[in-house]
Length: 300
Image (cartoon, rainbow, N blue to C red; front, side):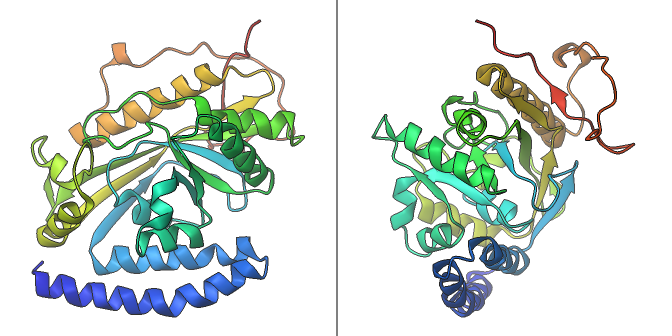
């Protein structure tokens, strides 16, 4: 893709943004936030189409209108339009993003939950807001690594903001919350598999500046992305937050390895889960659907 073509496509996106942003902001101001959640998805789809991001989705996402706290890996600024194009959802992001041109505006339109990392006590405030949104039926994406990676390796998942799931139960009256592992992987460029050396060209991590990363993306052409929804994890009143987070991390790690190498992990790396026998419930998933993973409750 030449810079001239990229510039023309950016102009087309800017026009689309200008046409949709104003009406969407009005919808939010009128208190119809959930209905207005479709406008950011449309904007992201325009971006994805204009800049030739080819997305393949695997697994089963939450049903429309079903609340879930999504625990995802984070590789690039491209993660936002990729995931945002799939369905209406909100992100948890660092507070600095709110002041960024265009990106900050889009984040606010998408009802992003901002966290001030410099304030240790702000985690509790963010958990309360996330809890309220989960009770309202929102789908919230938390990049659980707390930063971006190189697209090949997964960093450890942080557990503090998963406390929002417990808050939704203890403070909001929910009996359970769906934790949803999600893996995003950039796999091909111009139809050819990305090598380990090429993958950091797409990633935005460490001390990389945003401008050069965006410029490099515009110069390189079509990219294939695989988004994998893992099996949901049931978070109940007695669930151990760290155990739940570790289970989600393991699911994302396996999906990322399979996406970037083209083969599943060796059997020894896959944890063995003992089957749980229980009587059928009225809310049991339909035949053929992946059942939620039940994890052990916290112990005193």
